[in-house]
Image (tube, rainbow, N blue to C red; front, top):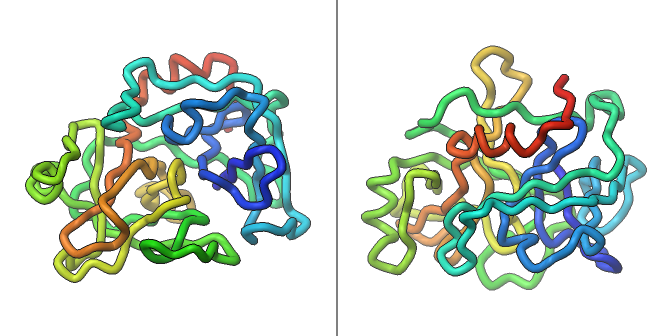
Length: 235
């Protein structure tokens, strides 16, 4: 998990995921109006606003936003941040390591994990003290569209939706401040590793009944990601 900071801020404004020694992936809407000099990426951060001694800050020199990104509909909500100086990974005793790319597209009806420093409830002004995790359950895009499309969002095939397993009860979701962070699942070949299947994108409120959160489906952008990371080294 990577934390994105604006110059002078003490709390992250968005999250991201390290893909290799050189690139972090995040949501395009997090960095759409920013330049590389506006953003610092911090790895190893656990507490919200204090350095635990594991902080590893890095500057970025390129922001690559998907060319089809739409800031109104949040379609194609994905961007790459290129680190000015490559990381030697894994680092800090494997505390900082790249997340795995997804090996397939569909992860329907799976328990998955979202991570972030965002609000713990809708409308809350309290930032959590430490990095938060929540287990959510993925649903089909067809079901997600039935729930959300009448309210405005168009659910596309390059999106993935997740919420409480009992959607009617609500109570589990990402929220404001979690944008850009990972939605992941344990890999089938190594349970200690996780695959990045989604990027926190948007939702209608937070944890409302029958209102799943919407994430960018990473597998849909595998080719774009690889094509735009030509100088990366993979471990």
